[in-house]
Amino acid sequence: MKRDHVYIVVITLAFLISLWFAKPLREFLSASGWEETKAKLVAGSIVRFFILGALVWAIRKLRFESFNGIGKGAGVRNLHALIIPLGFILMGLMSNFQTYLDADKYLLLLFVLSVFLVGFVEEITFRGLILPLFIKSFSGRKGVLYWSAVLSALMFGSVHFINLFREPGNLVGITSQVFFALSIGVFFAGLLLRTGNIILPALLHGLVNFPLAPETSSRKCRKRWAKRPTR
Image (cartoon, rainbow, N blue to C red):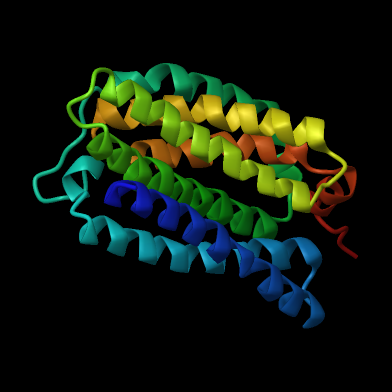
């Protein structure tokens, strides 16, 4: 196995294992009296903050700063590529606008922090590290960028099957989520290659998750978004 392929496997496994630490932290916060939704958001944000630090270290270790557009003299190109996706995201945000207005402001702030951390962590993992590793491993072959984008997106989509541990009876729903993640993963890979900066797909990733979350939450979770009545 090529060294680049070993790195891909190690990064993916480290990503999945690291996310597991959010569960005991969430349980600890819940046992300490934290409301369930807030405990989940805070635990996930803390774990992803540390993962983000490790990912930035990995980018520097593998010398992928230039690829991710975060090195010296790095810039952004082809900003017009953002027009159409931002339009769709804006429509999604507007469809849930009343939900955000009615939300508990502290909970909403935690949610915003959480979704953008998810965006940055997942984009740096699969587009900032795994994508260039695939490109290196396929260097010199025909269609290297195409196949690297598809394979990195396939890995990104496949890891969403871990949600079956949380919802074992929802195979159809989780499979749909996997195909959605795979499709949008190809788009984010293309966006990174076109704009030359990981920050843009990371921000878009967070914005995509923002309108989706209230729609995919259970009825019980949606109720927690509502402000508590004042006395």
